[in-house]
Length: 234
Image (tube, rainbow, N blue to C red):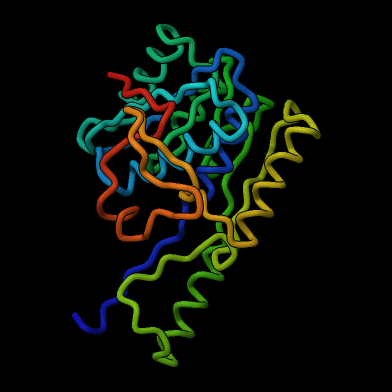
């Protein structure tokens, strides 16, 4: 096992940008986020999304729903999305899944969606797609492996290292809204960490203070709470 390395990108940084865009475009103040199991990696992405929402729209709520992998079929995810829209007046939908079924449902039913892949149909209601330069990630991994220059067992590539971006695709996003997303993207490229500064959970407990940040071990292995503004939807 000494030769085994694992890797991923800090996709929660993209979720933060998605959250900013969702917070700017919601009119009801109700935003849906459908994910898999309640585990730290999934909570990390949800919470980063909610932090982005709160950056621009502190009165909005993120309704979070979780499905086990066995329950997480496209049909079940879309039924859940439909309930959120009908019962909770959600008008923006995002998800952490292996496809864009939720984003596709959103645009097909007249509300805004956020995509992570290339599966959701082009539409003014599709606000944005995430972009990750996997070739750059793999090139970096291969170079480190050849040189044996990095002893890390887990590589976690940040916004710059993975050349990430949020590609805004909807003409409904105004120039002023694009500028707010672009500003946050520049901050990420210059080392800003979403999980830093004053952060409270949705029960009012302080989870991070000014001048501090939440460490990687906590983000990846110990996060078991929701940030302020997240409501568990069941």
